[in-house]
Length: 373
Image 1: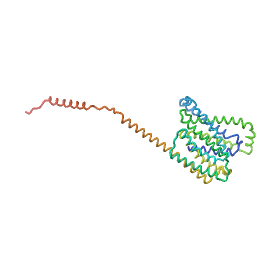
Image 2: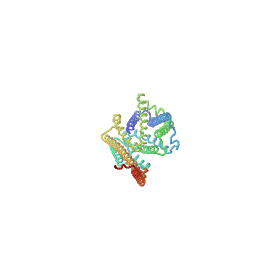
Image 3: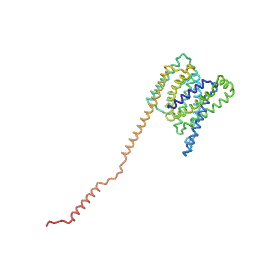
Image 4: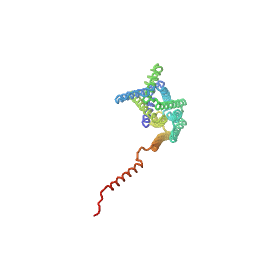
């Protein structure tokens, strides 16, 4: 989870920098194309590496999914991801990074609700308390943002909530595909989302941006002097951090579920809000951090750590109870099983003793006696 938070902070900070640079028109959706290109390339690289490792070890490359058929539920995954990603960037552009990151904390209770309803997942009282702490921290930040003098774009708030809904169903679908009877690996899910999103972006570019390249691309790029090397560094950093963040995201969903991913995203939001104050506050007042923001960050971190510890304790207790029940069942079966040790019958021992005494008596009778003179 720590790596997911670290790469996620880098990803969102570089994405905010791309938005601030205004390389092209917002309607051209440059970040969407970059992100899906990163997902597609990283998934193909991982797939090639996996095939090479299997060929070296002599392991067959056919999977259970290819034998059982492609799950139809997976077709909804790129739809949820594309809609959520598009809404997320629109909300970041309208509200700024910190407020969007705060509103995205609604993903925590929404993911927990979806997991409990559709996957019959249960949560311990400690985990529920941790979720409440995280929500309290996010509520502090949201209240501060909504009561400040700066105006809040209502359209941006609606788009941010829509992004949360789409991401919630995306996490639910990923968790279901990871644990179903015909599971899809994390790399296969990333490849599906990346290739589908890249194809959708290409179709959108050909139908929209390609018609007015001068007005939507070059008019924005040439509006100010730019260092091509610095622009390339930011773009490459965004794509690289996105690729590693998605790898960590799939690992979290596979091992701990969508709710744990939502909590990791909440902790990541704290890092984004904090570093946005450091890098962007001088040029954009929406990125600044105050006392309420610091309190919100502390509550979110405490809640995230408490949720992880609560899950670990419940897992250990359940495993210990399972092992104890297994040992008890083994002891019961051992006690119920009849003994196979063969002991001589008492009558046999008595007959042996009688025969041995008869032999000794016969020896005494037949032995020569020494008579006195």
